[in-house]
Length: 208
Image (cartoon, rainbow, N blue to C red; front, top):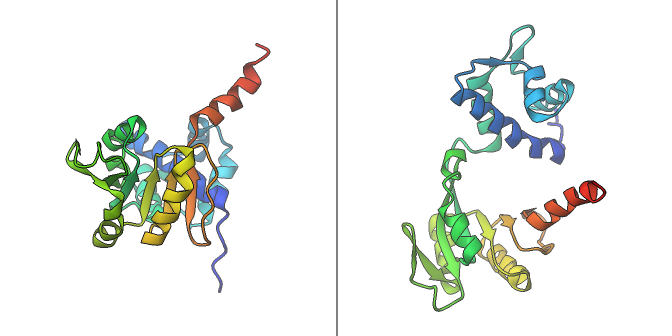
């Protein structure tokens, strides 16, 4: 029997469920209903049950979900029960902030290598990591078996950097540059653009 394809929108919601469950674990909550999860996430209980049903049956009618068990299952589904090493390209102000962000480790990720093409930055330390030149990227990606990369460079350089990351073997890219990237099939890109997000809110606030 063929496994049904999971809609991408469902995959994107799973980390939100995992984040909420992690918070519930910290609050020593043992069980949670789909109604309670929905209230935390601003979603309908039916949508949560439908999303989870793609991956199995995790709850019991009348008692809800065991929080630790469901979180464990979601971490396995997302592949974050292991640690993923990440390459960061671009160590300006934004790159420094990303490199020093302490939230990656708790969620299964670690910034493992820093790269920049500015000779003034190469060799500098950011925490425990030394900023490397771009020429070191292929060797480091291969040596550490990196699959994930973060692009924190100006928009004019983002596509060039992305092409190089893909050429070196990176298959998942988180892009902070305000530009849409073109990547070959099999490479995943996600975008973080604070200005776009703020503009989506000012649309609703402009007449207030």
